[in-house]
Image 1 (tube, one colour):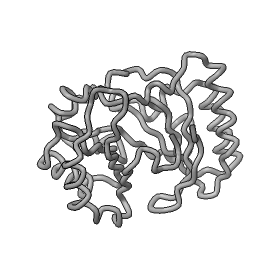
Image 2 (cartoon, rainbow, N blue to C red; image 1 turned 60 degrees about the horizontal axis):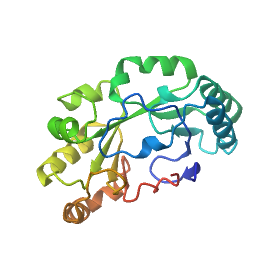
Image 3 (cartoon, rainbow, N blue to C red; image 1 turned 90 degrees about the vertical axis):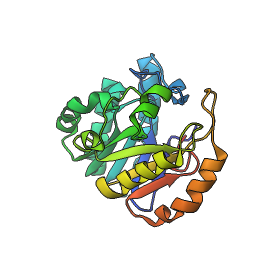
Image 4 (cartoon, rainbow, N blue to C red; image 1 turned 135 degrees about the vertical axis):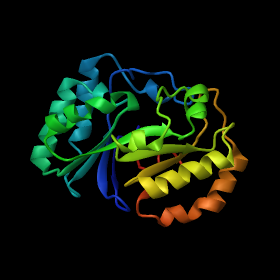
Length: 228
């Protein structure tokens, strides 16, 4: 498992994949990522401290991800991140949080005392597909509800049952209404959700130009950020 990397283009930053406590939601039908968590806080803290030693502060920006939300990191791990922020001169942190936590984000801002850039796993702005098929547990019906709280949605493309019209709408929203966005091409895993190769081929052809968009990162493999 690679847990530290440097991202040099579009949004330069260091990134660490830490271990967290179990995701509070844990019901997303497409996700096997939650296997990378633990209830043993000693194990979590020991591993995370080793990973955080890799951080140099080269870009003054650090992204911290785990198998759930920033709120599932242990108290010790958050203290360690705060120490790294001070020691390495980090000027901005990037975290991800479930939509459920939208009204608690200021807790994280107040704790770390540096600007926080918040990502959120949206997967799609189609409410029915997001919640009835993907079981995301995020009940907003309009992108403005997300925009109010988060800086950057994460979108997923290439799942059986998605349509071109759904993806066209998602791409229009992220191109026109958010500071940044991440598009993940779905990679099959141990879940029952299946990949739609024809849809992915169409997406590559129609939206390849987004690779040149400085605000949008596209992950054709789920390890394209260098961690995982």
